[in-house]
Image (tube, rainbow, N blue to C red; front, side, top):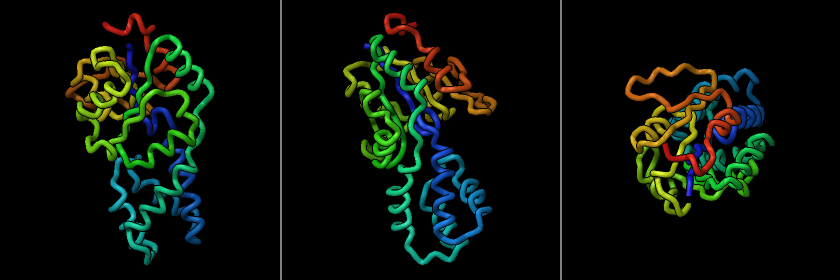
Length: 219
C-alpha cells in the first residue's frame, strides 16, 4: 500500500499560529506588556528550541519562581488548546488520498502531547498512524522512526512519499530513504547544499496535490 509520511508542526497544522496564540495568553496571564509576546516567539526558534532553555530564559526575564519542569508541564497541557483546526481543503485532500489507496502516517518529533494536537486539530479521523519521537525513543531524521510508522501502517518505505517543512528532519530523511520529499517553503528559500527536495510547495494543499495516484506512487 502507498504510504504518505506527513510532518505535524507547520505542515499538517499551523504550529506557528498556535504557539503565538498561546504566547499571547501566557504573557497576558503574567501581567506583562503585550510586546513581550514577540520576545517569547523569537526565542522559540520556530519550535526547534528545547523547552528547558526557553523557560529558563522566561524565568530569568520575568522573575518566575515556578520550577522549569512545572512550567514545561503547564505549557504542554495548555498549548494544544491553541492549535487551530485543520483547513477544510486539507481535510478533503487527505480524505481523497486515503480513498485512493494511500495510508497517511503522521511522523513527528516531540513529546506525547503531540497526540493531543492531532486530536484537537481534527486530524485523528483523517490519518492512519501517528508516531511520536519521545514515545518511540527515536527522532527524525533517523530512518527508524519512519520504519516504525511504515510497520504500523502495514506498508514499507519503498512505497512512501513524504511532506514536511524541515530541510533536515524531513527532506534530508526522504533523500536518505530514497523516496520523494515535498518541502513546504513557508516563505523561505532553500539553502541546504547537501540535498534537494523532490518538489517544493507553497501550501499544504499544493503539496498534497503533487502526490500522485496510489498506483503511480513508485517512481
